[in-house]
Length: 572
Image 1 (cartoon, rainbow, N blue to C red):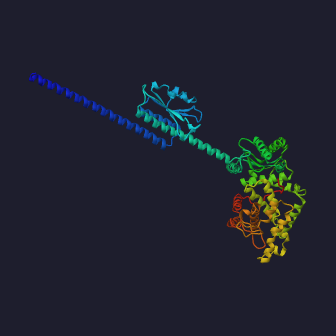
Image 2 (image 1 turned 180 degrees about the vertical axis):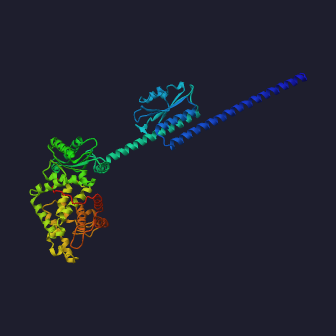
Image 3 (image 1 turned 60 degrees about the vertical axis):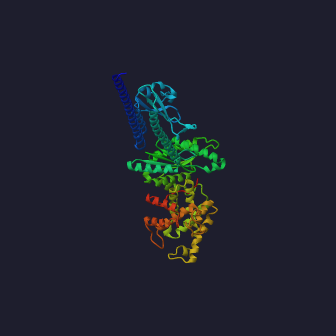
């Protein structure tokens, strides 16, 4: 081979080596470019996922906006033609709503089965359609994670998602799952809270509103009626002789009677009325936009409906009711007290009647019924006469017992006592001082400080009074008379009882008695004003008096409802 040929061969080899090197360099550059591009795309996808996560966790967006935002983020991150988020109904396996798409063929899936979504169950994989089920461990249905929705990805061309794209799609699907799970849990919490609130405001036996719900509604309706100058009326209703039903037929039958009576009352009420069970056999019927005349008519229709109803296993049951309106009462607690007072007069008139409260009518009824004293034994009348004799010994204490009884009724009403117990409390309060008949006048009317011997004579009146009424009143009423001078922290008489050991009626009478003593003329001092008397009671709340009773006194004072409430003494 000549020198020229060898030179040509070397040149050819060098050219080829140069071309190969250039090709290798170009390929390496392309690979590097592709790597950088992939890194940038991965970074962009990660940024989109991150921004979407921040939006989901921090922005106060509603669920539709959140799901639409996740679908839009998925479109950008995956370069998809369209991404749609379907939300499924709880436990139904059906599409509840569609987000991120206005395609008619997709939005038309709302209300249909979730397995009709394209890409579900492996269908349409050859069309570049990928469906990612949305689920979360916190939402379980029949032991498995419930289907919360579907994230549907439609690619521009038929292909599968790359590993990187699939990671992005699953990340966004996880965010959608969390948003749907949070929404589902939030709904469950709200339902639980609403159910708890409903149970807290509902009488478990009758399903009517309970005492708490009634008091809240009463306060709201009184405020509304006062603000707009609208009428408001209340009927307080009590089943007659209900104790006989329980004693004769058993408490299960009695409960059925209460349920049926509540249903009849509710059927008579209007949509905006409130019928509540106040406890025992007592109901309250609050009637907005109603005066006392219309309320009386409504209550009497209910009375007739219950009287005409055949209660299974019992037969005929009647009710008595008292009606009052806000125009006569002025405020909520007094509205209840006056309606309750009218109920007592309904009982006193023979039951199965509705009494419409008015001061004039109550006075007339008291005069008409005074001679016969329905449902009263002659012996109790005799004891009441003795109580009057005690009051009459000193002109300054005349009618003290009646005033204390009226205050006691108001306090017990404010404390939520049922009507039958309040009537029995009235009986006991009227005769709470009857034992003073055995205290010498020189001691009872002494204007100065008592000697120790005289104080013992005075303190004997509580036990003596209990002995006097023992054959007339029931044992609980006797305990109220005996213990009305006991002190909350001890040191009272005659038994040195403490706290809850003091019968509740005695605690009420004690506050009512102290209030009347302080606000009435006495031989040894002038009366104090209501404000000063309340402050004195408050100072001794928790030491001499039951704090709950003093709190009720404060509420009555604030409402101006501390005038004696006329009430009969017939229980039941």
